[in-house]
Image 1 (tube, rainbow, N blue to C red):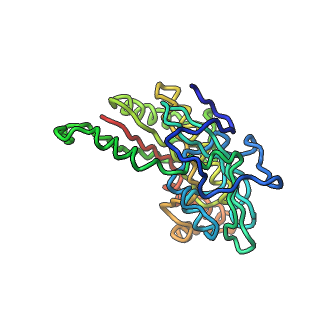
Image 2 (image 1 turned 90 degrees about the vertical axis):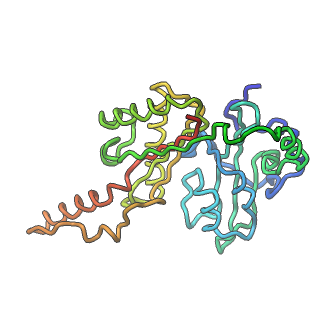
Image 3 (image 1 turned 30 degrees about the vertical axis):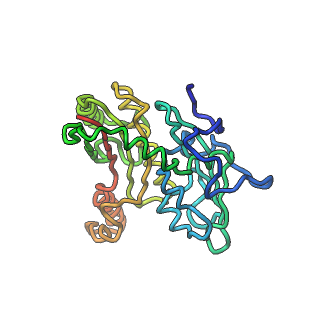
Length: 295
């Protein structure tokens, strides 16, 4: 059965137990935002093991390291509620379901409760029954030479931001000719794979603007690159777009603060300083593409 992107839940696979973990059934006073108001309305395929670790008592910093920032413009520090949109594979082909998840904090920014919009979504966090794993293990014949089985290969590409887009731009129309040429080369290399499991497109920015603005800009750039790769023949269902904002800097503001060239005149010095700072921070403005598949 084809499952499209909806905020739902249908019956959960029998591989999962019926009890929910690490979440509460939504109460009548809990309000979830509209999906269309999210900066990531298509949802994120987050690491399920990391969601399992989310529980009351964790700090906001610990939560951030597990499942990153919220998918709505709620800020990082002041808000008492973070909302997420998560996608879960059903185990049937590429089908998945989409669930809304809310975390509430106390006055000390410690998690006090977690909630699913549909309580059945919590069943995706339950580990499969151990006997299922044992049966799968017994099905592998001992005489198989595992060294002859093709193993997935991981290949990484990094494209400088100024090659792809002009400063502070992100739309498909803003994609530079040099950037298109680089993406075409990468697409041809990916097409040479025997099979592709996933293509992750991750956008990065420098730290000149606010963290929220940078996350949004980096995600929009990644989404544009994803759409371009799909337009030149790659399977869009295996391409994931993610914004990392300024969380993985190559050059920090402190390292670049002394890079500005001083010239005569206050106005000229200010302009030169800004230009030199942007140039020094350029390695941060990039898009990385990770390919996992069999060559």
